[in-house]
Image (cartoon, rainbow over all chains, first blue to last red):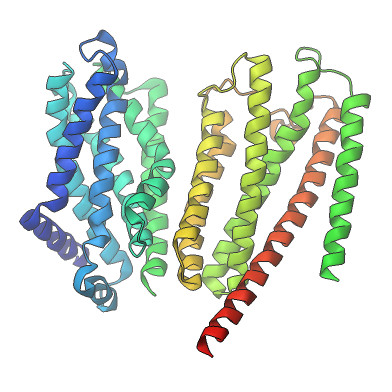
Length: 222
Length: 228
């Protein structure tokens, strides 16, 4: 359970400084506000693309959190010390993923009611299935984002490289989460043909978690 | 010697492409419903197969790099990806031209088309990552990992026409459908042109590989000159 201690360390350090949490949350609210200028926010059609809007906000906000995941360890060569410690690469990676996952999920759960108020969307009747979709979608985004954060941590252009690598690669998860969220926010249940999206989301999480855990040691060891 | 073999294969590819172009334009009949524009299919599909082969080569050599740590495998992966991107671009552009004539639009946000574009962007990201890393070993290691991840999008693109209902025409070649849906002569031409493009891709990869080797030699000499 060393990964749990690493996650706790990251969360504690983030809650003390709140640097990426505050930036990410305010960025998410700004994007929610900006979207209202792109179309009529009081229109009937909003529910039809609500999932897309919400997940775009999560993806943008997520990139800020994920960028910090490994970059947080750069000052004072903390990353080198963590890599040199007896903690395995997979444990370190899993700990960092869990911390980013919790942070991102908090932002999502704060954004959801704000989104409901701004765009007149009723989300409370479908909260639990929505939470399930959020958990699966956020895990997919976090696992891939944390791996790419490790890949790009030493680059001077890492703030630019991470979203550029992450967004195209996470499209299967993003697409599925968007579709499932739209279905739920429109007041419908997930079933029939829509189950393919749920399967794709679960498959994405399983495939990328396995690949990431298998390859992260290679990335971290220099 | 290596150069002569490359020129020889290049000449065979060029002659085969010219011969195929002649047969496609003058010997094969128009398709019943689509008319003459269907001929673009002889480049669209083989370009896709060639790009897939390049991405597959990049995957295999990336895995080999991670296991053997030989920079030559990294150079092959990079060259194959660059060439694969060029052929994937041919696939996308020819598809767009066909779509403009048959559908009346350049682009449809259909699963197969979207996935082909995503795949292109993912591999473009691979090349961007390489440019951003200066240290050759670090670059080879990180891009090998990214190449393995990127291949997932290739697999999804391949299966997209089966997983989603798409506007894109379904599989027509007998190896995927298990039955003869198109004229055997037309199918044969797809494979012949695939062979020509594959040979061309091989030549392009070896040329790029040669450039990469020369670049490494120049870098080595530069380092030695600085040391002196």
